[in-house]
Length: 241
Image (cartoon, rainbow, N blue to C red; front, side):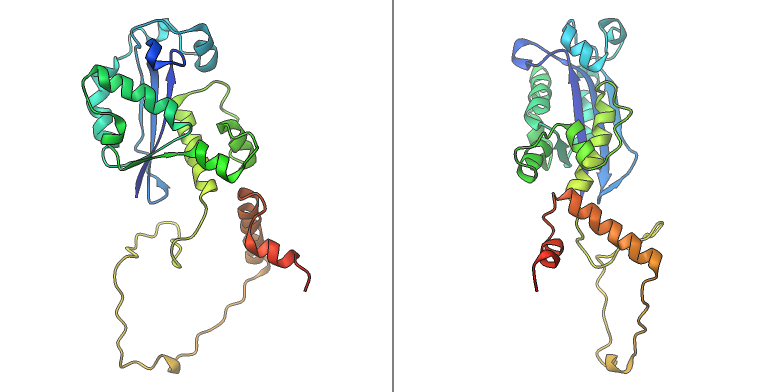
């Protein structure tokens, strides 16, 4: 699956009032692995920033004056996201701005270009009801290092969102776990000769050593923390015999 983690910075809060994009950041992930093929633009919004917006993202009118307009990067952006699943934190905000920019160019909205849109804010509210679910709050809860985030930045926030998403959706879809550098197509069909009596084989049992057991326990603890202590095995162990 190809996923694009996307974030924007804007001149204000309302595309209906004429606020525009000033930054667009996209991070690509394929089959839950970051590819490094990211997309990032600073944009000339063709209007002044609000003072509150500059305090958030630090992108002044002077800095943005010589940057490309959205119209100049629209084709590259649309080609990049085409057919992917888009993952956004508070998707309604970013999609509203992107759709407004596309309407100015008489282009269809984002939903018409992509496979689907996932809102991680909605996911977080379901997983952690009643708790703060901003990107910073999720980074703290899921132990994602956001120490570089002194100001909001679209590309940095998209990178952080990708890390948060991975930790929020931890799970194993197959019994085969790739090691570093593995390049195996696991969807290939494996045929076993029916004439072979598998009962003739004695499979060795390799017990885990102390280091492997400690690593396994640490991974289980991370999973338990990521889902708010709702893991079934922890609840089962806590039940009286």
